[in-house]
Length: 311
Image (cartoon, rainbow, N blue to C red; front, side, top):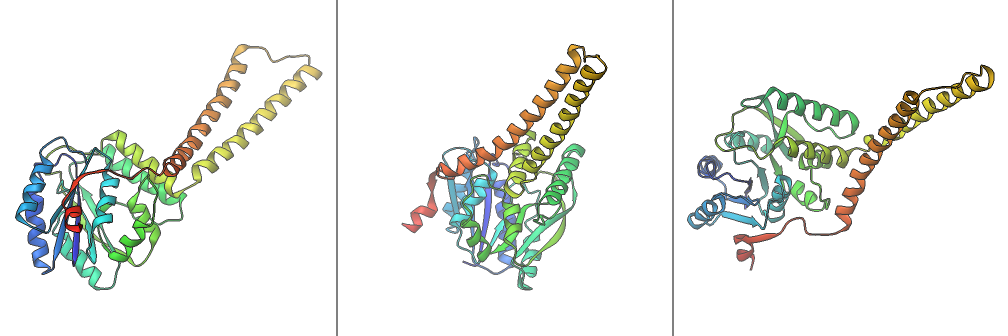
């Protein structure tokens, strides 16, 4: 198999056929044997029925149907586990990332690169809040890690099968694939494009999921939050020491005891707040350790025609 195209699906019934048609046209232009792997991530609409219809028409259309919603990064990981192509493309189904850019990616791969990712020049149809928070997150992540994670990129990229083989050996449960791919190294480059608006349907990444994704990215590639807690502990200790010193001097030499409920409560609440923040950050790291030592499967497959073919 020359190419594998991995497509995570979550309630994308309005986009599947158009995406498939455009992909077919692009991959035909490459004159290559291509498999299309659709991962249905617990969709509540008719996505899986449409995918099964495509697989009945084309033997190279594969599908993985999850038992429930496991999340975008897990869906992509399942596709990476099952793909067989020498080159692997990851693309979402909302058509914000143009399939036609795959041709340009393939040219870069022909030049000897192992990873070619799509970098956005502009992002249509997204709020100012989402743009500014996304930009801020990646700038912060780059500043607190030694990994050079490219700005203005998503998961839309093409990779050599050697990258996929390394990703399969990375067992962490809280996936942050674009960070993992940057961490792996090899020769990487980019192609630029203007990101379109979503073709149809609603985004699968509301604010809550974006925050969780950001936390996964930071905790997976940086221990800066733990160092921040340690630094705050030192600062609080110093401030508390001087407050105690001031209180003792006032009582011993000036007979002026520190009176008032307010000063005591401010000190207690300040120290307690720092402690709660610290416990919360440490808890995030411990939670990830717990998820990995449980050794539960990363995902559960309800049905897949890939399994049938392997059998």
